[in-house]
Length: 229
Length: 229
DNA sequence: GGCAAGTAAATTGTATCCAATTGACGAAAA
DNA sequence: TTTTCGTCAATTGGATACAATTTACTTGCC
Image 1 (tube, each protein chain N blue to C red):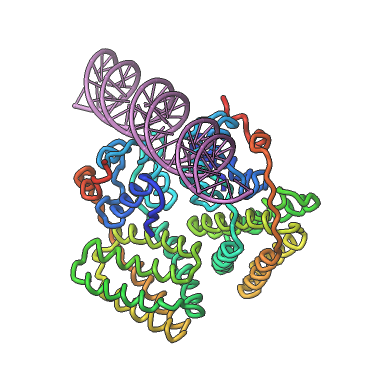
Image 2 (image 1 turned 30 degrees about the horizontal axis):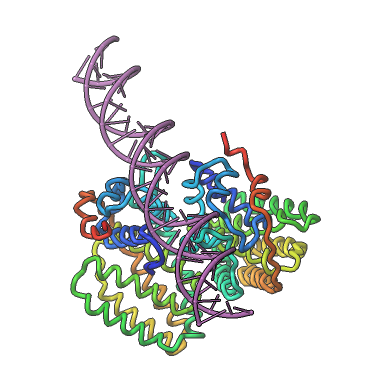
């Protein structure tokens, strides 16, 4: 996921994305270019580029001459995203049932153990891990295009969950993850897709809104003041 | 498709994208920031932003400190893209069979007539129109997220076709487009998906490479010197 | 007291400037 | 002749400076 490639832009991009997914930056929150830039010790140019990319990913929206805000997906938009996600993840399962790479199951099981370890804390970490399971699944298909799209919708779903979910209660999710692995191992496409459908449906099922603003600087100081050299 | 939204960045973005799709800018061709900027009468900053977005769309790749190039999808990458495209377009058909908007068929038929009109000229225009049929189809689902992804893969497919297709021979394509509309109208999911599968498969079937460089400035001068004010 | 207009502050949009990295060419040594 | 090292040109990476736009506040009028 984290595009470790080149430059500061990517670093800021990753940091901001992480902050959004982990709910440190809440939906609707403003992201002034110089405030963010100061926090990370880089110029507006860098922040700008990162924001452009985040907008492409649907995690941020920008209004002309107004600035960037953490996206606030509407319920309708949320539903559309889930629709696409279900479609893509079904394809992932279809492919994996046909061709799962060697170390695939090891990686998946390792990840599930990770999730189980973080089960207690109901916080941002478990949300992130739950998402990364699906991203890992997609990556195992070897289809990078597919993996990228899955990654994008999963990220947006995390954002949606942070808006509409009353509590994440990832316990059942982890359990379903295991079941999905099992079904794939048995090559049982239909069952795997059914569980996945239920899994996503359950995830999408939780509603209720809860926005609340906060101070930007305090939050960002957590996420890598170390970029300043 | 064309994000008519706000600024110069978008304009340059659209122009470059169009130039790539219409094969004016050929795969592998360099896109130096200042050359492009001069042509359009804008500064590097703008071009830079546009290039970042094009990279996100997979139409351009950038190498650190080397610059941007029109993407040259490998055969493997091409196959991955077609795999995703098939998956997404099947979903489009599934949705449209359930809920096609009022004016849907009119729009589709109008577009097909457009394609038939351009049938003679085997050039860039028919490639673009063929792609836009699928984008229109996706847009009619009302799912903007889905539409955006379809749009992206269709664009990349156009690029791929421009690399690997010996001739576009859009005649059969237009015919299949009509068949797809018909099948959807009858609510025959399976048949529509089958035709679509064949359609994409046929499109993907044509192979053979053909790259050839050219002068950047001469090309870009076609695409909107008018941005200079 | 409320509303409107004008002005000032804040923030983005864009351009230009400097530094850093890469690739190529050429010269010198093996 | 081949290989290697060093210098130079070209181009991007990043920062700062300036212009344009929007928002918010203040002031004056009704």
